[in-house]
Image (tube, rainbow, N blue to C red; front, side, top):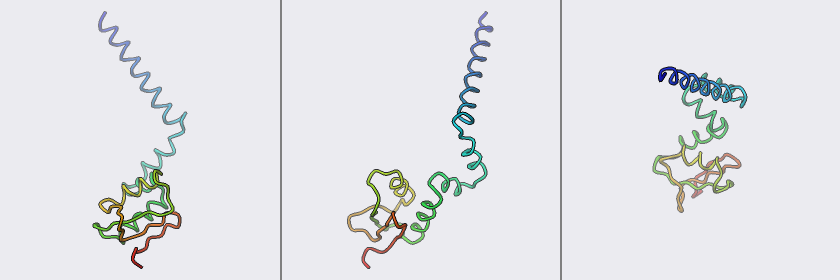
Length: 115
């Protein structure tokens, strides 16, 4: 009797798992994202999630700025998702009141602050 109940519970669990899996891929149409992520390297996955253009610019900023540099963003909202992503990818460089670099997010330009 108990084994029969366990088998039924297991079948229900597997059925729900399959339903949620199919829903995520096909009904919500996320299969394109998964296909794109499977075919990319780790660097490509970061670029896909962040946005190729923004990720390329942030990689360029990391090449230019030393790790101990301070920077300041201009032309971007304080709580925006792109700003948060930029802060994440530019770490260990930090935002500061006396910046070494100014990063213009609207123009995607970086320049030294004291020029």
